[in-house]
Image (cartoon, rainbow over all chains, first blue to last red; front, side, top):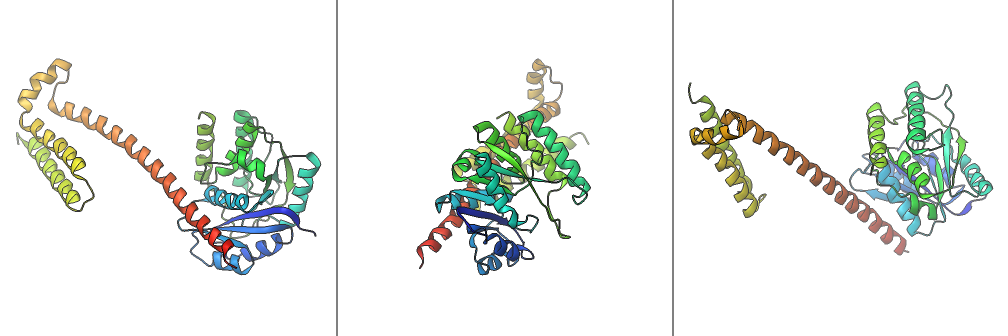
Length: 222
Length: 115
């Protein structure tokens, strides 16, 4: 598969030494450059990422998912990226689907493509409930049409990034990105993506869900 | 004991004056902040010592006891402090984020310059 010119991948990672190498090697087949943001990991995440050929940026203090994505996307913009694809470092996204996102972007002449996971039996029950809740919540308060508001597998142009650049440092980044896209007139389309849940899958907790809902309310009334 | 409240109150405020002094000695509080807190604690001691005189004043504003006045003032002060701390924490969080990102970016620039 040919690499997409000007496409940079941003992978936020914190203590992801188990799956990161495979994710980077696979992602490198489809993008020009892979940027890994090591969010103050206590394991060999940064070292592994560097060996795998990624450009590694290190946070000396843990900033969270939103903070890491922002650092990575800022770096990608600085290095001249035309488009940025974000994916998780725990291997839950399949990098071979990157061309599918690119194709959807071109086909719809969109500024952003947001991955949409299938809410099937593979998805843990609590996650399914939480995603349905956030889908309704986002639709009701912000008119967002995307069914899966929480996935990290997303593609957007560097121009669109300037408009959707977020302030959330935690998991609320996924929702804020969508809200900013909706409010700033960024043309976005959903694209169904596969999700692989590993046994050591970390993900969001109920407390994170409450924080996201709170953050969304604050965005609504800011 | 007739003066239990007064004794406990004064002891507490003396301890607070001592702790404030220690923080000032360690250079964690500058002179102005130290003076402001010292006045605050000393004001509390004066209020306890002269509470019979204060009673006649506060009864004018429908507060029956000096203890009630203390409770009202303490709550007001705590809420104000909570708000102030909230603002400071948000500000510090933002600054830390900026610093962490700047350090990461500096590393990136150094990497891109090296052959």
